[in-house]
Image (cartoon, rainbow, N blue to C red; front, side, top):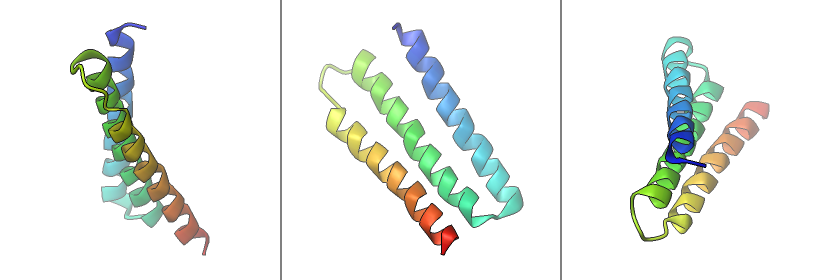
Length: 84
């Protein structure tokens, strides 16, 4: 896959994060906050992926994994808090 496909993935995830943040600012629902935090992390993960594959020669795999793990854990914490 070319850089264009990865760039579209980055833009899509950042657009989702932006739309969730905008929706949270209007609604102030706690679950939206957790989703915002998750998608910001996933957007950062996609930026790191693009950077890793096409910009730098060093591997950013560990950083990408840490960012993805934190993002998913944030969503999991939000879901658990909302269920309680």
